[in-house]
Image 1 (cartoon, rainbow, N blue to C red):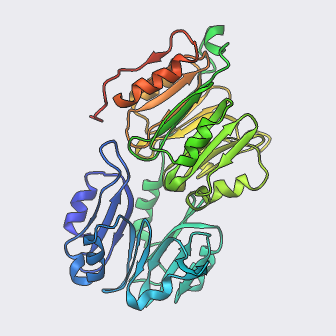
Image 2: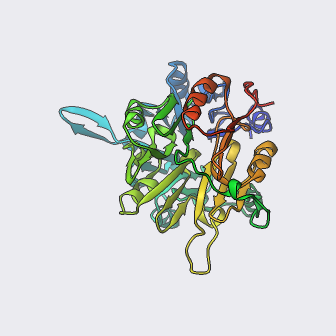
Length: 423
């Protein structure tokens, strides 16, 4: 591991993408945080072995990810375009529409041993050159989100599928470390034995809150009854917020993905198909969706009329004696891999929550919770009695309170109005 990159990784930053080339070349891009939407960096040594990458970096295009091959070979994807080294132009396909040439969008790619490569296009199609039969089989077993090949060993690889499961062929001495990284410590709070008053268990207010944090800094939307507020969302989602009717569920994901529900009507943005292909597939299967929780890197939890679906379902969801998933009231992904699930009986299951947030969730039965993906302590909670608690950026407070005031619910409880710094 290059020393500069090793020192950076020891800071435990949250990464969206990471790639390592030869002769000290490397690239990383961070996930968005409260102080920005994710910086990215290319090592100075990259200019020697991959001068084309350095030129594109200095052009100030926003780089999503880079796949490094042998010196001089690369595929670099920005928000709008895929740039391949001249000798690897075949990795990027094009098509013609209305007399114009467009690139086929790429989900992920990797170079491997002796010039081999794999490309997974946005629609899930896998294209490859020079890979072994075992890898070919694993790449077609399920839809792929991410693949990494070894430059030194044709049989070494790591694959993550769109459902969050993984498979790999790695050196034996690495495997325990990989398993340790993937392991989650889950806290379970069974509130069924706690005594709550009838008022704490039920609300007479019909205007429950629909609230969603976005994956970017300063991005959210909310609605309660006729009132709504938002920041940083797409115009199409804004138009859905302005529609008459009670919004019962909202969700904002990466890459322009969003979900909206009012009455029995639901809408998923077209961009969801690329960013969350499993969510799109479930929505088109005829399942009636109650709500969607979008997470980072394509992770999701979906509550439907009969079933619950999730990335890494074997870890996140519990199974009843009838073989179906335990029904959920609400769920949310948070900062740094955190998540929380409230099961239908009120049991709270979570991973890596801030202590303050965990304490708020234990106070009384929760109807709805949303965690911020860009700040470890920001949250919005609605309890079963209709009261709410939140800790949000100061500049949101005025708009959130106007929406909440329209509910005519006594005793709503905003959290400390100071802007959190994350310290």
